[in-house]
Structures are given as structure tokens and as C-alpha cells.
Image (cartoon, rainbow, N blue to C red):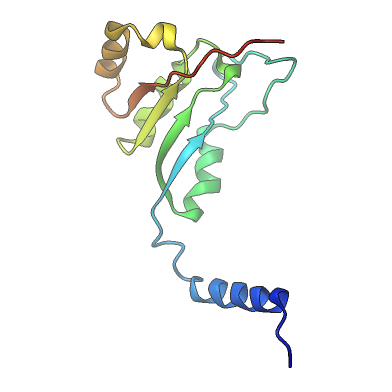
Length: 136
């Protein structure tokens, strides 16, 4: 009998799924990039696209069963300059979560970042810099 690669991988996957069936509750995962889209806060269309409502409660309902216990909530371009949604959700998520804003002009001002973190001690807001892209 010749064992094909496909048969081997299928069998291996079945064994792996069976072996990890009870481990879902034991996993502790970090979601390194998630978006919370709550239409209670300002949402701006980006190139004509407005993302659908995906509030914190819906995100948690989908990720808790997977074992997600911490992460980084990333501001999308559709949230523009508004970070009030981060101020609302980070205290609810707790200290294992951070907010990421890619607005270097505002957060590069040290006083703004310190004031934000002083008001919202549960969770941190970090700035990431990326090279400016040329628009075509």
C-alpha cells in the first residue's frame, strides 16, 4: 500500500483535531491585530467603503471560545482622527489589551499621549510610524 501525501496530511489533521479537542479552554491567545467597529462613534468612509458594525460584544463572542485573552485593537482609516471608541473599550477589556493609533502627528506630541494614558490607565495607546505612501 502506498501512502500519498494527501492521505498522510488528512490523517495527521484528524489526529491533531482529536488530540486538541479539550484544549480550547486552556489556550491563552493574543490577537495581534483586531478592529472594533462601533457605529456609536464616528466612522468615516474610506474610498467609498464603510465597514459594517462590529462592536466589542460581537468581537468577544467570536473570540472568547478560541481562547483570546489579550490583544491589540488597531484604529482603522475609517476611524480617522477619532479615538473615543478606544477610550470606551480599553477599560472594558482590561490591562492585557492595548490600543494602536497610526496617527503620528497627534500622538507624537508627548503630552497628548501621556494625558490619554493618565485618563485611561487600563490599557495603553501606542503610536506606530510608517513611511508615508505616495498616492497615485
